[in-house]
Image (cartoon, rainbow, N blue to C red):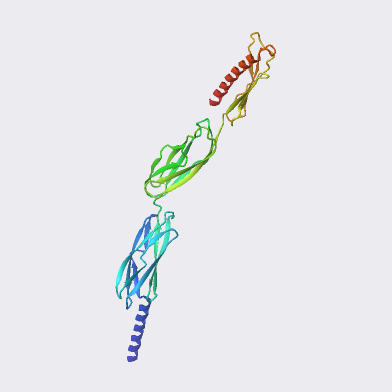
Length: 328
């Protein structure tokens, strides 16, 4: 019986010593799981108790996901049997997608070298999120026309909260129908982007758009390309040598008109020139043309300037007609 009592006592002592060596301190978390919006600090309380036979220094370290921020004091000193509560701060990064992320707290005794680790699961919610949806990101417009100068811009609030978003652009000649838009969580709204390019501005233009929340970090960017063309540009060339007047289209539509006068043969008794057209119409966007044959009743080459003046008047009339056709 004495032998059994001694063995039992030794076993109990060994177990107690082993337990003491394995856990010279202990920690308890107020919670091991939190839900949070990005950029929002989460607070976790940690109770620390020194169970060693003498005073000890307990050290702390946080292992965080990339770009996250957090804080825990480096260490505390506790007397034998003493305890203290510390605070851990964890803040998810602004760019964090929704989902669950592990954060590990490492705790170590300086004297015994014992280590304890605890995992805190942080559920990141999509609290604030905005996106820009464009039906088209490229368009050709005519400098002379107001057509095609309005784009639809859809703002989608995929966050949980209603927010007000301010719209802006890096180009000074665009205007939004509403520069400040309130969108409920999970909803969307459409605004108009109106182009007002200054006169003479041609070629490819890049317009960057920004939608930014007035109350949170939510922000979205997108862009469109606008190719401004000179569609209806005409120039006239006078040729006094033979009385001919030629009008050509240097714009994008390809519309053209030309008149030629012989300056030698007259038709009719009045001596006024007569006009005949080829029956073609100039239409914007087509390579159509209007051709007129002008013959004057000049006698030989004795009245070149009279014929020229009449031809100029006629070509002005034709230009007016072309302008009315194009604009109509």
